[in-house]
Image: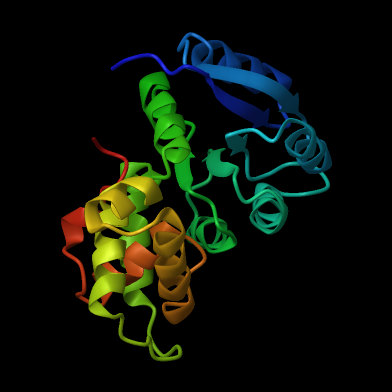
Length: 225
């Protein structure tokens, strides 16, 4: 893999300074990642993202004053170009679903090894979803088990085609190139997919499509190359 012309710019937010130092150390061993700012609580994370406009924000869930989920909602509303990777010790069902519904692009447990976390940062930067394998299985079960909500409007053939390529980890640009359409058109298709499926992110839309039988189950392993 060739080195990027510019490193992936990361804001790292965790309320434990020792944890931040450890994460930063192994992230920056990868020369393609540059931690441009750290934050010890939610409001600091918001300020750092506002100031630095990072490519990826790595957020702990439990932080003082604003949780990682609240910061994720703020990012989706105000800094849409920034990808969000939740890095946490919590794998409880409500946390997982709340983070993905808030618009997180990835959810990785702190028990993951350094290489897995580095891969997750790269995946989120590239527009892919990054799920810890245990979390992916949990989300499949949770999303598949949700019943009784409003019916999901059927996707058009083109919308399903775009969602399928997105599920395979392709960026909007790559999808557009393959289908012979513009990035903006791809973005419009995905927006309609999210609206029809009541989904806040690619990950949630894909998991829902799998649960409905519209996509094969193994397509949910989005973080793998």
